[in-house]
Length: 228
Image 1 (cartoon, one colour):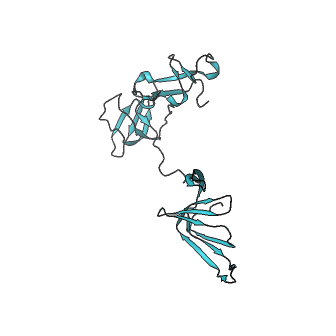
Image 2 (spheres, rainbow, N blue to C red):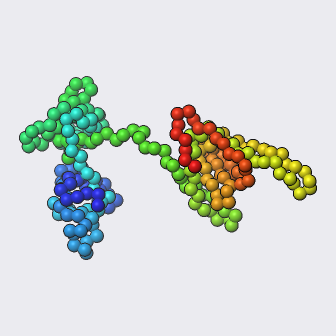
Image 3 (cartoon, rainbow, N blue to C red):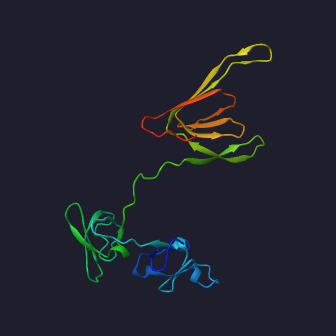
């Protein structure tokens, strides 16, 4: 279970309907699924008696002095009090009060906020997600049906080259050795037969039949070598 008894949570929606951020929508988890009657399908019960599924809740963070926060709402004061601005928690009241958090902004202004219940949120990290290692594209099979194929991300490669050896043709002629080079490949699919399909940065698809004797590529400087 994602939450435990005693966790302070916010009800962010009921079913597919997003709910208002009012005080009534904040509460502590009082029961988890194991302690809820079996005839109920919900995951949690709040102290207020509100039943909820896991996807309907969001953990309410605890803030401390020095935390960088974003003003998510301003319902406890006034909607004009710097919504979406970023500030630093300057001090926290040591007594029970409706607005325990004082947030200071870059221009020096300091404002009291209701804080963890409504108005403050931790800023979401930017550009911290790693690029997806794989993605799925549909390929047309020989039987005329489309199949899901898992492509590997090779976006760090500047190029990849396939060398095919010379070979004899049935009429006695010799097919010369050849090299197929794909610049700026982005996605690679290796078929069970050993053939490769590559999608480059322009969205062009390339089919490389099996049978090559040598394959090489070059990765952008400073980028990690992708795992094949």
